[in-house]
Image (cartoon, rainbow, N blue to C red; front, top):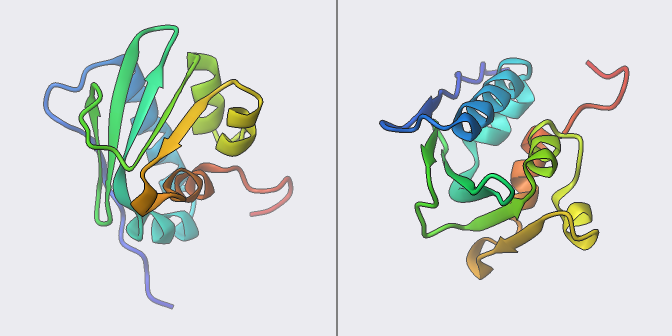
Length: 135
């Protein structure tokens, strides 16, 4: 089996917000813990905008295959956007919630570009928690 290279998660120059740092930390932890997640990340290409509506904070997460770059603000165009309260975004980043279910419950607003309709769900597969007892 071929080893999957590390996928660096970096903050773009000038990205200093707490939301950007939290997104970076969650992604780094998820990728460090799993070869499978690194393989998934290496196949992700697109830009995800995340907005914490209650803090008026936004970041753009740019999945480039060989790296993930995070910048402050809503630097479009985006393949998908997810907006909602900070706590709901945090649960999503921790892999504890599903973007579709949270959208249907009205906790998050999820939008996707037609050309990359399933991008938020592909990112969710990268972030979601393993079942209890799985390694």
